[in-house]
Image (cartoon, rainbow, N blue to C red; front, side, top):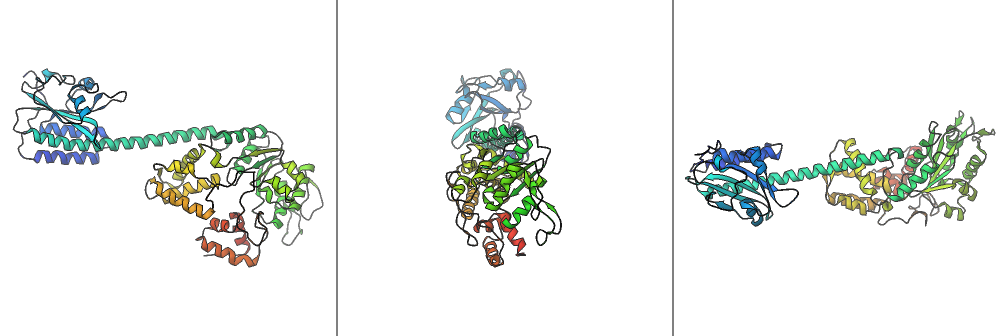
Length: 538
């Protein structure tokens, strides 16, 4: 014998105990090994030491072509493994890979198809050496080859070796498939994290305004052009498109960044209180005015005041706001003294102010004062590609907030991109939060998302996308307290509305935001009504 094989055990057991032990230990390795190298190498070692199937190896396709190379082996040196490279269809292994059929070589010295590439004949026993190769099959398609040497003259029959190798091949296929799935999932998460990191880095100067669509970039460019000026800016667009974010950007990129930035939602405060909130009041100006109070305009002196939903301001306040813009003066409620203020106004609305002017609901002169530099914020459905980016951002943030590890299943991102998003970014964020909390496992499946979207469509009555601003006004919510259609429905708190408020909350299952929408109110308005009427529903 020219050279002894240190792993060449005879394995001449006539019973099936050795085979059962190998299969049992192989299953144990699959369950306990942390990496495919450990599991597969351990299985190949069992084949050699217990069954005499020596120099076992697993050959898999190379990345760059259809050839094969030895990926896992037992009993081969690193040099021998490196030599074990075969072109497509080359040698016994190449033929098995192409045909998907088992190959048995009774004598490697006599078969011209056997290539002494991974082994040197001088290192093998001086006996007749056989070679067995079985395909690694996945759904009827070969994905690799499992092969081993054995001494031909053994009491143990070839059939038993073939049966064991075929069973082990199934185990190895499952290991490889699981590892491929794990690598794909890990690669996806790495890609998502990289994209999210890149997006966050690129969005830092824009105060977290995420998006790569041209329509959003145009709005950002316009905002940055006038941020460091004193010009009055009017932000237009549907609700939930990020107008408050843009107001923060305009303030922080201006010379007023060290001054205050105050915001007030003109639609969320009853009109009889809005004047006091904006202009302040003197002591004794009305019942309950027990001390002097500065208004938001005065408090924002030297800084910026963001007036959200300016289209809901009543005509009397519109004229007083016009005076602020023209004279830079205010008078507190109940006062007669002019107070100078230097404040920059940024206004926002989801309504079509041009149409409101034509209908006599908004002052033309105030409109011209506010509309010096309009910036239109595009709805989410027109921001191509941004749904995917925002979804990843909200998913990452929500997972961290709730300590979850939910990922998106197949087709989920595509479905989110096809949804019309009548509530825009705010609605997308809410749906992602709900999806993370409701996901049954670690993957949000398409059926779970569809259930959430169906519920959302039912709640918002948004079966189709609303018309683009400002071609028409946004669809008016159901009338509340008898107000005219097309106007913001809330005007005053009335005791007779208590039953209606409670009934809406009960029908919404205790969800105040849903109850507010059913009455055509904003959530802030609805909560204000409850507080003022002393309603504390169970």
